[in-house]
Amino acid sequence: MKALLYVWNTLVVLAAVAAWRYGFVEATAANDSTNITWIIAGVFAVSQVAAWWKEPKKIVSGDLSIQPTRADILYDAATIMVMLGLAGTVIGFMDALVDIKSGDTSGISTALWTTLVGLIGSMVNFVTHRLMGGLKG
Image (cartoon, rainbow, N blue to C red; front, side):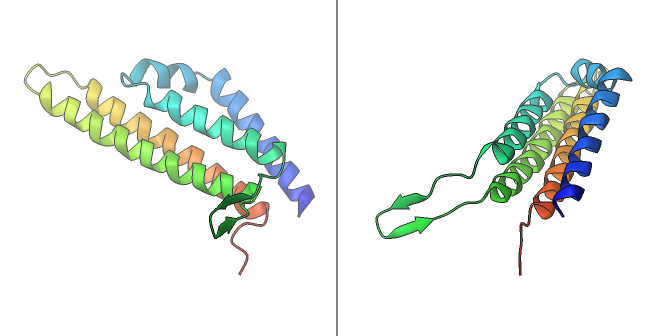
């Protein structure tokens, strides 16, 4: 399973390089007036580094003791990325409705780009989470 995880992460890095090389990153930056996609990318990058860095410390609060795993970090980050993408969708459509009289469609563009980036980031994190042994029955 560990070999599959390394192959998966290599493919993710190659996909990121291809996205940069073929203009996807520039198109995203040009079409997202809220910059939520950069926040999503930051959450993705931090979660990937945190998941590979070291095992998280035990959280103790009163009688409650929680031992999160590295896979938990990926799962939580994936959930946050989806929520940020949906927030970008709502903000983008609100922007579009405000500017509907002028014919400005940048709000629709923001809505679609933030949704796309949030979904892609979360899907990658969910797959990595599963490969790291998350959600064991």
